[in-house]
Image (cartoon, rainbow, N blue to C red; front, top):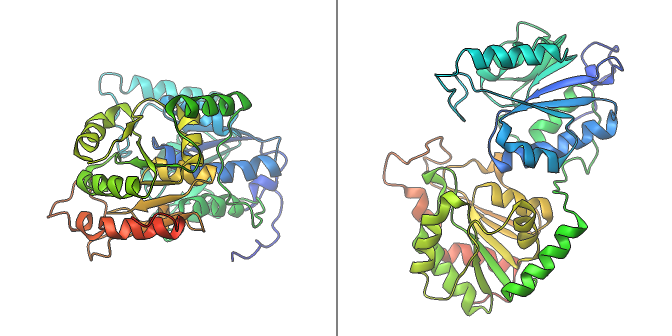
Length: 370
């Protein structure tokens, strides 16, 4: 339980209690769906406490659709990339003109407050400082000390869940929290609900009667082996569930391998759902079995049941808890780690077995006894 912050003078350590702070830049240079979903509860709390504040998200232009759906963001300022931010490398042909154009656009916004909400990386603090805001704050990475406005920085909370980290940052800046502050959500429209119901009918699926497998993830080290997914597919089918597999266009080879390896029919919906369609598919599934990736966070946002296989990922940061979620960790000495490709013999991929996954499924669905 985080204690309530002590009173502070307006304009001091709690700038979001200052009515003159209205234009806020949030440096959130992440490309993952899960990253954005985990930021959304904090943005919702800011909007509820200070509806007059205009938040501009500094991020990549191709995530605009997700940002718009999540709401509570006034504008998106496209980020061109910079050395030190590994999510995407800057285009050498466009540099430094793209950076100069970006910083000029930021300074023209006359931000009252710029916040580093990226993570444990001082390169993001340099981005925030380049925006020309009147005040500067956000996460203070490990071993780094702010030169400006130290009272507006929060030492990066390494051991906290991603949702909680962002809530703690905004609490540090003056936004009060309450027991429901961490609730995740993904808004969908009535038309999307109607389209989803019709789609289930076309596919011959009924709510609670199908299971979703999601074998993809952005890095190879986070992908549970396809043969293990294939075994789980067979056991779910023998338990009476229709097996559905999802993925993005880039995950087509993984999905094709799973469909070919499985000994039971698998309904292939890879690259056949938009964001709302996938969210509703997960909400109405009996269970999702997937990797530590955006789909697990999407299931949490819509209240779907999920079993998430963690390999190198840190469950303290990314695992969802509660009666409808199970997170399986490998329990090997080298995990968690930051490797995108395992440099040894990938022990965490073998540590979680299909038996363990089905045991977690049975905890969520007692009828799944196969």
